[in-house]
Amino acid sequence: MEITWLGHSCFQLRGKNVVLVTDPVTPRQANSEVANSLSKVNASIVTVSHDHPGHNYVQGVGGNPRVVRGPGEYEISDVLITGVASYHDDEHGQKLGRNTIYIIHMDDLVICHLGDLGHVLQEQQLEEVADADILLLPIGGGNSIDATQAAEIISQVEPRVVIPMHYHPEETEGVPAQLNKFCREMGVEAIEPQPKFTVTKNSLPAAMQVVLLTPR
Image: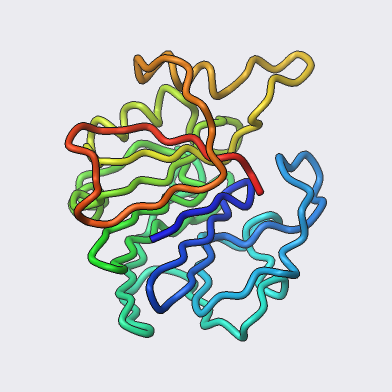
């Protein structure tokens, strides 16, 4: 599988027979980490964690994909997807509404995309994501979990690969680099970003690895 970060919470998962896009990002959205258009991205499947701008630009994905929204079980083109109910905030959705966590079984790998999760995992949610090989999670804070909460969730799930999302890759005026804080929380040294991450079940690292991707 080849994993590419398209910015914000949007990833392209390119498998042997299927291409899946998560949370398609609105081009040139305000305060986005990426200003690219999705016009050249085709997919078989699109997952949407919640209907906020920057996460639901389904019309920007070509290929007439099947769109998955909300909790439930979905089987599309030999890809099994489980949507798990969660919240966009730490007040049971009272401030920002609901969020869906997706567990994606594809090419013998289990990928968990946390969407715009706003709280640490509850027991039932943890049971659903416990088998994740690869965890895609926000780290930037604001309207979703921050670096400290992200590190706590990683310790709960214990995935083999962690790929952070929903953060500004570079330091901005008055805002400390969110990635630096995450690396400190994880106890890892500076990591060189890469344009894509290629992985199979057999090539998963024995010890947990943090992978940084450059937004495309």
